[in-house]
Amino acid sequence: MPEEKFKECKIKGNEMICKVDTFFRAMGIDELHPDKFFDTFYEQDFGDMSSKEIDDYQDEEYKKYTADVDGCIRNFMTSHPIKGVSDVDVDFAKDKVKIKLSNKDDFLTSIRLAMEGYGMFYAGSNKAFIEQTYPRNKDKVIVTHFGWLKEVPAVYGTRSISGCIGRD
Image 1 (cartoon, rainbow, N blue to C red):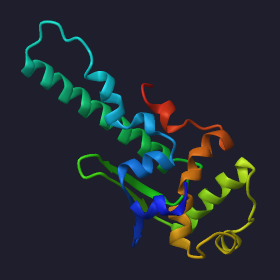
Image 2 (image 1 turned 30 degrees about the horizontal axis):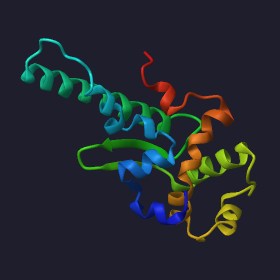
Image 3 (image 1 turned 45 degrees about the vertical axis):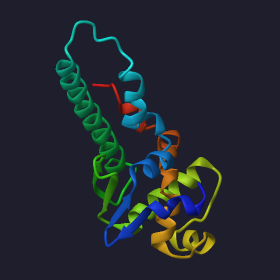
Image 4 (image 1 turned 90 degrees about the vertical axis):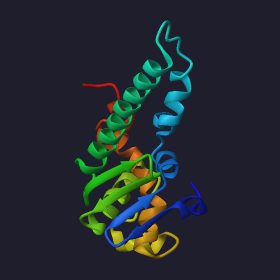
């Protein structure tokens, strides 16, 4: 994803904040966006249910679904082998994904190792990674390359965000 697409992400202190669509695109989970999920959901036949019953049912299903997606993203971003993330908050109403970074260097290492493990790139250290990428600024390298974390399941054999949805 070209750098201009990441203008919707920024690092403020120890938080990386992205628009929901930008985060979902970068992580390769567009199909999990509630808008796409509910495009088909609203086409269902609800039989004899009243409009209020349908609205209540859809609201409840939306809350359950977004809570599941939020939980799967949080699990993925805060579990081994991804390091340097203390928490993630997905707020669909405010169109924000907040990633709380406990250690930017560890988070950058996780990104670099995902890239190196995927086989398309080798830097060997965070310093070399920053020097080899544009722009040569740690925060911007994190923001423009965090999407490589979607390759963690392929590199380490762990569960993907998409694989988490619908599992107990």
